[in-house]
Length: 554
Image (cartoon, rainbow, N blue to C red; front, side, top):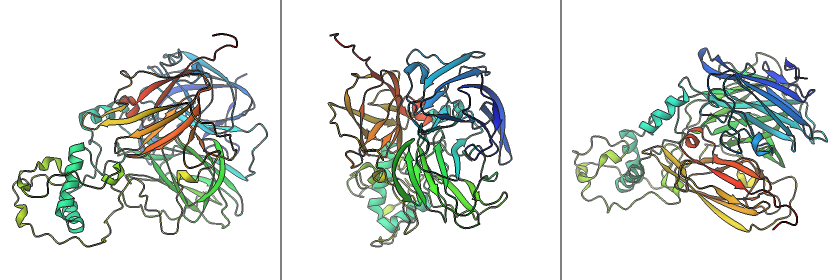
C-alpha cells in the first residue's frame, strides 16, 4: 500500500510543508516542473511530490522501504540517497553500478533496508537538477528510540536558488570564471593595502593572484543566489515554535549547490550532537560553518518567551537567509548585521604573500592586467607615488583567510577537531594510502582530481575489506566538500578511537587532510566534490570496491 501524503502534524516536518509518515513502507514520489515564489519573486523549479524542498521522509532503522519515483519531466532524472548505506544499484547515481537514471514518463522502484539512524537527505544526481529544487530531508529514527529526548524536533534545510538555469551558469563560468565575482578588489583597495602593507608586498600579492588567474574575493564561484530555509527566503521567514524551557532539536542540512553557510542563533547557544547523521560527544558552540552535503544536529534550550533569529550567511556574504524560533506565530527577532566578507590570502596556500618579482625596481614594465584593482596603471610613475609607510601591526580593514568567519569575541565556532564519535572504535592501521590531489584551472573553469577530468580519470580500485587511508592535497584556493558514496570515512582530526564518521569532508584551500575507511561496501561508487559546478566540470572519479571473495576460492 502506498504511503498517504499528508500535511505535517508534528514539528519534525517543515512547518507548512508536506511530509511522509513512516506508517507504511512504500512511498510514491513524482518529479514535476513547477514555479516557486521566494520573497515575492517567481522562478522555475523542479518539485518532488509537489514541493520544494521535497517531503521529509521519516523512516525507522531496521525497516525495508520501497520508494517509487515517477519522472514527469521531459528529461531524465534520478534520486540519490545521500549518506545512506545501500546497494550500489540503489544509490541513484546514473552511470554507476548499472543504474541509468529514470527516463521521462517512467517509474523506478528503489528498495533497501535501513541500516542506520540519523539525519540525511536525498537529491537528484542528474545535470543541474539539484539546484532547481530536487532535494529533501530524511530522518531515520533509531531502532531503540532516540537517545536524547526533546520537546520539539525541526528539520532546517538550507539551499541556494537562482533564476538562471544551471546550464547557463556553467556556460558563463566556462567563458569567464569570474563571471559571478560581483565585488572584485578596486584601485582604492590597492591604495589602502599599500598604506597598510607597503608597496612591495602589496604588488607581490597582486601579481601572485594574477599569475594564478584567481581573485581573493572569489570564495564561492557563483553569487547572486537567493538563499532558502525550508524553501522560504529571508522575508518569508520560516518559523519553528517552542514553549519557554523546552528542549529543541534542529536538524540542519546543507542542500545547496555551491554555498558554505555560517550558522548562528544570536542569544542561544547550540550543542552539536550529531554530524552527518552520526552521534558525536556533545559540543557547545555559538556558531558553525558547513559545506554542501553536510548535516549537523544541534540542541537549543530557549528559556525566554521571545523570538530568536536563526541566521545563515554564505561565506562570501552575498546575502543571507533567516528563520525564527518563537513562542508564537508572527513573532520576529532582530536580524543581526551582516558580517564582513573575508579575503583569501596567500597564507591559505601555506605561504605568506610574495612570489618573488625581484623587488619593485622597474615597476613600469609590470603587467598590470594581472594585478587586481590596477587596471590602467601602466602609464603611472610609481617612483613618484607618495605612499604612507605601513603601520606596524595595523589591522586589516576586513578579515583575511578562509577560516575568518568574524566570530564575535568570546564566542565559540565549531572546529573539526571538536568532533569526537560517541562510540569508540578499535583503531586499525590502513594497509595502503591513496593520494587524491584536488586541482583547478580557473582560466578554463576545469576542476579535476589528480589532474584528470572524470572522462579522463582511471578508477580507484581497492579490495573488499581493505583498510585505506585517503590523503587529500588541495592545490587550489577553493574549499572542496569531498563526498564518497556508499560508505562512511573516519576523518583524521587528532583522535584515534573516536574519529568522527563523515560522508562529506571539507578540504580547505591549500590544505592536506586525511580520512580512513574500511572498504566493506562492494560496488562502483561516485567520488566527487559536492560543489555542483565543480563536479559537473569534471571533479569526480570512480571508487571501485571489488566484490567479496567467497570462502575457499583463490
